[in-house]
Length: 402
Image (cartoon, rainbow, N blue to C red; front, side):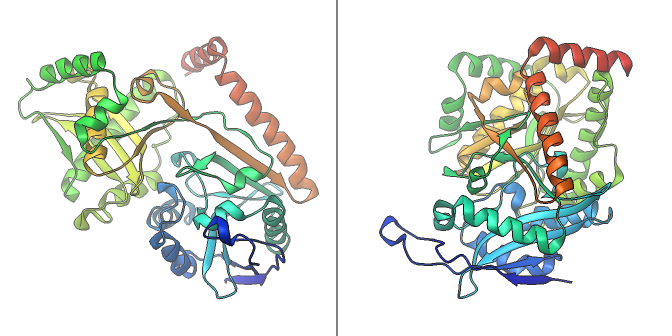
């Protein structure tokens, strides 16, 4: 059942330019517990090139809910703000879940979504105030029984614009996202913009070694057979790497695998799959895999792995990334991110980390107590990860225990 209510923001301002920042916006807030009901507003904002990240594409979230959060019994909580004419101004794609005695609202995707945000009309994102946002969140919390909003891994900027949810009190996410801004009009220029000449030469030498394998090639999945072969290779490779590190395999889950496989298939016939699969392969092996989700501005890494076979001697993951950067350059994609969390290979391509933050706000007594505890826990985790000696020791202990 979908629920709608009205919230009047008498002094709210949404403008398309600096000269028109004063006209009043009387927002209607609709809240949907069904993705299909929210889809028209969602599609409209997507067609308007609303500020968002690739993880907020309707197709990605719909697929996630169909295969993961829906079977778990979790309920969408899609907040849509509209102007007086009913046109959508922004959309907040939340999911409601119960944990013990606390009802929590957060983004879809769990650990598999590296960047979370709303969909914002650009003029609204630049004009909305903290008071307006707090009033909307408070009303949603009261009417829908939300104790706590836990909004993790949000980018400080969305397509260069300040994230409106950064107006709330927040803290740094334990892991920043490693990203690179690409420039140039073609693939080679994009590669030169992010990778030093010496490193490009080293990787060309490594690729010449890989090219000695029969049938060596870079490929992007174009058929379901390709997509299945590449995903199966990823799952096998990732399981082996995580086992060696003593890390729990988050992909050892039938629902997650079903989501990934459907994401690799859906849209493939039209040349725009929800999850793109890029690989290096030869006749006998899939050497390296990269799976990502993208929009017209950004390609975001969701999954990656490399072979445990002979090909691993020649840094196949890094070589594959050179092809990926060229791909972005050829398709006019200006930003590539390699996901959250430090890994040395990311630093070769990404000279910047994208500041991300968590917003944890309680709106009931139990929600405020829980928010305080979560804030402390997340803060300690970031400090731990920012101290290399402690983090290395923890990983060693984890591996020994495993």
